[in-house]
Image 1 (tube, protein in one colour):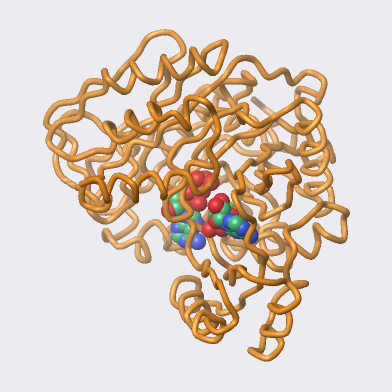
Image 2 (image 1 turned 180 degrees about the vertical axis):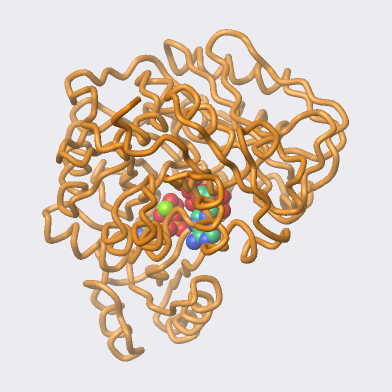
Amino acid sequence: MQDMKFKKVLIANRGEIAVRIIRACREYGLGCVTVYSTADRTALHAEISDESVCIGPPNTADSYLNKNALIEACKMTGATAIHPGFGFLSESAEFANMCRENGITFIGPSPESIAMLGDKARAKETMKNAGVPVIPGSDGAVSTLEEAKEIAEKIGYPLLIKASAGGGGRGIRRVDKPEQFEEQWSLARDEAKKFFADDTVYLEKLIIGPHHVEIQIIADMQGNVVALGERDCSMQRRNQKVLEESPSPLMTQELRERMQEAAVKAAKACGYYNVGTIEFLVDNDKNFYFMEMNTRIQVEHPVTEMVTGIDLVQSQLRVAQGLPLNFKQEDVIIRGHAIECRINAENPDFDFRPSPGTIKALHIPGGPGVRIDSAVYQGYTISPYYDSMIAKLIVHAPTREEAIKKMRWALSEFIVEGIETNIDFQLKLIKTNAFETGEYDNSFLVSWLNKQKKLK
Ligand code: ADP
Ligand code: ADP
Ligand code: MG
């Protein structure tokens, strides 16, 4: 306790991830401070932390994204570290740098790593040079239309135009034939400018029937990097993840070893520390390609925690304290199978539109191998200002088959009244033949939804 670099952590986030971090801090023996907007006065993260500071009005630009207010809140409460969670400022190199300048430990990688990896075009170039297989495409960013058209001819169609600063499934445009290129080019750049204030784009070949398989790593400041297996996140809608599992149904021990090796190489290529996720696409011939690296804790981190028994958020705290990892690669054993369903306040019957409102009744499933990460409670009012994810339901069982059964019953038991949720939708999804057999790729969910629409 005496020689800790920091003893009090400010959590610059809200919702279930803020609550997750409060728990980790307490178990680690650290004090915790949360921040809240005026819309979040009764939010669980604000209610249960040791201290909580109001940092502004509901809109995120003036509260959860308000860098100065967050630094001030640290000074006010004596917190000397900030955990950014995911989303918000978690991938802001500028914010990580502000923390550094103010003598606050940013619980994440260095601002230099964030800047390099957050620029997806540059990250791809770095990985390619380090010998990590990347998706065929432009070498880095492309700036003029003429140049882009030339490169597009070389790559071949269909292809994607992707925002270099993109994230959250935004800023990706598909081009099927040369005639469409010019139009999509300007749309992609406008969109990138609008969402990310940066119109830098790059080109990438569209991988057909791909699987999204990502490797979780953790690295300390002493240069140790350990890979913690994979997560399959191929169940996606609008390039956003809906359900995740570990191990991936397509994984073999040999493929895992090769992907883990590439992921460790990727982390070492940029002097990385903190938890990190290397996202790959795996094609039908089981070739894998680096897509991007996420430099933060990920929404779906619990499935990895369940199969490895390693607490990723506590590991983040440990690494940020400057301590070496307390396990080695050979200590990591993948046990059983874990599945996570993202539970959102949304209405699947109306194109998944958000469904804010007050939770009138709530029953949460339980039992062995059932975990809920959530920040809602009975009587809580979900505000329309923030992300619609209200809970993550995670199950763990010895085999995939048993995990699916457990998820079925856990979803059936889950009751949320007063708002619409996607619980029944998730139940239907895990009952599909494609999920049961594990034979689904990134395009499955969208085509399944389209089929259902036609039947109506
Ligand atoms: P994960 O792989 O952890 O699921 P996501 O892409 O779903 O990552 O992003 C995690 C969270 O961060 C989501 O709530 C998403 O809306 C938010 N997010 C991701 N990227 C951005 C961004 N560039 N700007 C704003 N929010 C983002
Ligand atoms: P973000 O930063 O928004 O997470 P990613 O580059 O990780 O963007 O891509 C998000 C999703 O888009 C992937 O999980 C995958 O489903 C799809 N995708 C991205 N690039 C390709 C590609 N080259 N071919 C096929 N699908 C892709
Ligand atoms: Mg991604």
